[in-house]
Length: 298
Length: 279
Ligand SMILES: Nc1ncnc2c1ncn2[C@@H]1O[C@H](COP(=O)(O)OP(=O)(O)O)[C@@H](O)[C@H]1O
Ligand SMILES: [Mg+2]
Image 1 (cartoon, rainbow over the protein chains, first blue to last red):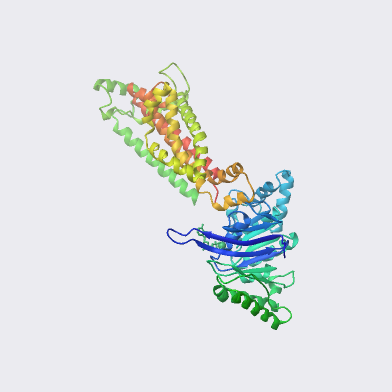
Image 2 (cartoon, rainbow over the protein chains, first blue to last red):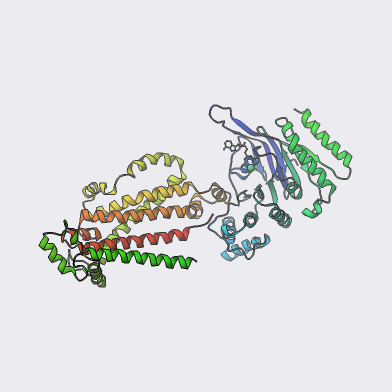
């Protein structure tokens, strides 16, 4: 963990206050690492600065303080090494699904031949199950299909890090479930490193290796990194048969409804937490420990 | 259902035209049989047609005049005797020249204004002052500086086309969704590439709407400009026919101005449809 693939150090973001009011520190003291091939989810209440952190990692926004390193180099500006999937599909509305993917592939590999670019793009269109609809424009696709194109476009450029900001937030529950399964499938095939924001606890457990929990803003911090060691491959069906699933779920829900507020502004170090597992007693004790450690540090 | 609506609309349109033409024909004394000659005689008897309502030519006269003119629209027999088609071509040519220069200047400038809040603020006062000026008010200055009546007319078209294109381009460019610009950024597109492959297609419908407004205004203005500078063109032609007291010709020219204006508008409308996209 000392030198992870991606390292976020003491990140802080302050927005100037509206006329006469003091500046607003949205989050501060944010530290975490992401290993290659890891799937990380971030959960926290709306307004705690999740999107801002993601935008800083993408290079679309600047932090007030702190650093983000990838592969040992500090992140400055955007890069094709960091793909982003936005909450609103953000496809070019005048281009077909396939052309949207081609557009990104062409930017990534300008030297490739037309045929190669097209074949590569088509491979990812097929991966998200959109063959047959590839010539439709975004306005002719359903919300779920649009988001699938967005996923295909992001995976197609094979970034070193894929950032997703509540990618399924606007979808209905059924579509959401299907796309989650598809995303897991693609992720396992590509070994992509993913950093994703969600407000859906079940989604986080299904997808993540680790879940970062953020306290409420202002002055939000990452309080815990919850390890999810439910074996893969996971599906929504098998997941709910796991005891650990409920323990993690309870832990996350408890954090969101209670501790995210209590801990706000009191976190000194991000605690690594393992919930459940073989011995339930020790797991809940570990849970308590981390809470005391967090509280005692303040 | 739609076909049905179209058919009914066409029937109503034709009915309105028929009623108007019949009423017009009936209100002109001797109109139904009379032609050019008879009217001119009548005009001469009453000492000039302009003051008398009955001097308006009958639609049948206009139609027969139209058939004569349109059977040979492009003849050219000296300064004051050119076909209606020739005159219209002169005017359309001037409009397209002035308009073309306006597009070349206003679209890039609109991009700059739309992309840079500083330029937007810096140039806005100039635009706000210059835009409400009647294009014809520039004519004396243009004549003095350019010293050429044709070029001055083109300049006036240029000036009146700039504003709608400039304002619409700036607006279209400024309202391109931030998400799309972020996509361009994460794909590491150069500013030029972003402008051409993302901003231009995104703003194209708005830009073309501006261009459509501009071509409409240009066509309004060229008639007046040519009345002022004379020589050639449909505006000069109308004025000339008025001086000849040939009202049949005047009415026919007015209709042709409308038809050409409609064609120009239709062209730009279909171009707009081509770049239109659903969000
Ligand atoms: N440009 C800005 N100016 C001032 N405050 C901002 C700006 N952008 C975001 N904020 C504030 O920062 C906080 C975090 O925003 P955001 O990162 O979108 O949160 P989240 O994604 O967790 O819901 C919010 O309280 C928001 O009001
Ligand atoms: Mg957000």
